[in-house]
Image 1 (cartoon, rainbow, N blue to C red):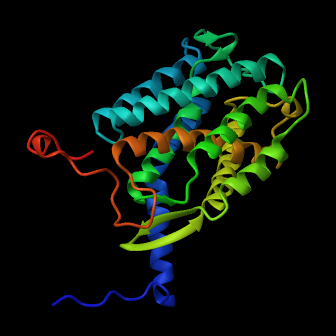
Image 2: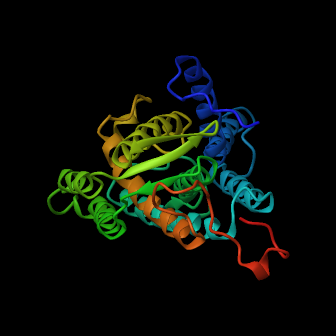
Length: 289
C-alpha cells in the first residue's frame, strides 16, 4: 500500500538532502570539473617536463575531446551542445575585447589563438552553459513567473555593459536593480531526493555568481589567465568580480532556458518533467531526451 511521504521539514532529513544536493551539484559540474582537472594536470606536466606542445594548445585539444565525449555519452543533447557552443563564442568575443583593453592576459604559450586569445578560453564559458543544462535535467528545474523578454533584454544589456563601461558610464548596478524588478516573484523549483524545493530566481543567480567567483580564483591560481595586479604573485580575485559573474550568468541562463522551452519544459508549478511528451509517432524510434 502507498505510504505517506515523510515531510521534508523533518530535521533528520536535512543532512541526507544536503548530501544529495551536493552530489547532484557535483554531477552538474562534470564539465567544469574536467576542465579544472586538465588545468591542474597541465601545470604539473609543463612545469616538470616542458613538452614541445604549447600548454594552451594542449588544453584546447583536451577540452574538445571532453566536449565530444559528453555528446557521445549522451550527457548532453545536440540542442544543449548548440547553446553551449553559442556561449563559447559569446565568451570568446568578450575575452578578445578584455585582453585588448588590458583587463587580463594569457601569459603561457599557445599557437591556436584568435586576436591573441587562446581558443580554449571559450570552453571555460561553455562549461558554465554545460552546468546550467545539467542542472535543468538533474534538478528537474521549473521557473515560475519567469518574464522571459524583460530578463532577456537585461541579460543582453549586462553583456553589452562589459564592453561599454570602459568608454561610458558603468551601468551594472542599474542593470542589477532591473533584474531584481524583472525577477520579483519568480521562483526556481527543483527536486532533491524526490522532494520539491523552491528558491527566488534572483538568489539562484547570485549563488551561481559566488561559485563562479570561486572557480575564477582556482583558474587564476592554476595560471589559466592572469590579472594585472597578479603580476607579482597570485592572490584572491577582487570580490567585485562576483557581481560581474552574477550578471553574466543571466545570459547563459536565458540561452539555456530558450532551449529548454523548445524541448517542452514547463515554467510553473506543474508536474515535474524535464522535457515535453514525445509525439506518438516518435516513441518507438527514440527515447526521450
